[in-house]
Length: 380
Ligand SMILES: [Zn+2]
Image 1 (cartoon, helix red, strand yellow):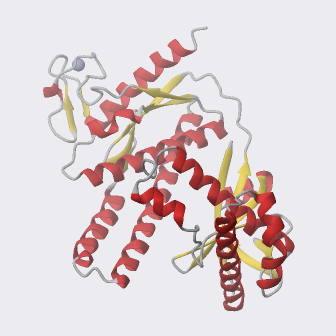
Image 2 (tube, rainbow, N blue to C red; image 1 turned 90 degrees about the horizontal axis):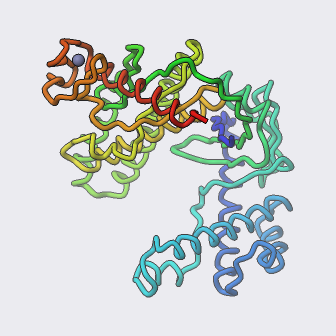
Image 3 (cartoon, rainbow, N blue to C red; image 1 turned 180 degrees about the horizontal axis):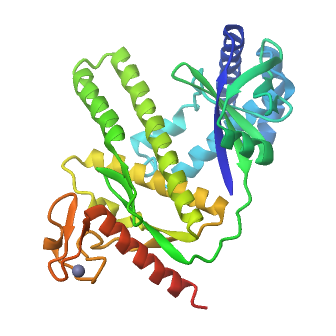
């Protein structure tokens, strides 16, 4: 399994200046390569190198490897554009959007991310430092912050290139790690997970992960957007963009913590994890504003993905269950009735009298469906 580890760099002011100059140089070089690629109708890495390598290496003071990465970055960007055009993502042939995309060379932001390979970037993981090439010379002892789990993953499984990224005044390295999957243990039972908005995740074991903090952050940003959108100034837009990314980081962090707790609970008790199949999430999460649905369904998918990879690493089985009527069905007797669900939090069966928190009841249904689903798919 391939996963990425993102660490925050802690550069000194001098190092930060050098990093900034480096990103500016490589992206100015990328823009030049892109213009030439577009003019010459030459988009393959190897061909572009013949035309541009010496020019950008000397013109922008790039190391040999850095120059090659710039050219590859441009070639990759055009390959992606071509794939998008072929897939019809930019409209039909002749559409205004597609014509514009084909008529102008791809531009790279001055702060666009840049890949570094092992010759341009070396990691001293125990010391939490990296040594990285820059236009101002090699930067040594550049410190980074990482969790114990990230350090472990980095030292055991980091492979190939890492991306240098600048976001909202902070520097990051995004390292690629090839983590082997653990052998999936045959589960004795399943831990069901119900996803929601009031409670982001509730397990059939009765653990509820509240969405209160996350919903508060979202609410604050929506309020801010409402106030700033009226202004429509550039600085307002910039502030909103920064807030949006901050919210996304907060949501991702929340999802990581929840996913870890769920996988740990399943691992400790020898159970697999039953998740809702999210195909139907849009129908289930009924809210007035469609963008909220998109936001939440995106967040649910992320949580599902985090649980998926953490489970794979731990050898915990994961199965996806049909979520239809999990909130209306009694997890004790199986009776399905809309009236079973009294309100957001309370479930009380009209047939057998079983009562439970509504989300826990739903999670228990998902767990039961996981058991059935596993038996069916592992019958042979
Ligand atoms: Zn019942």
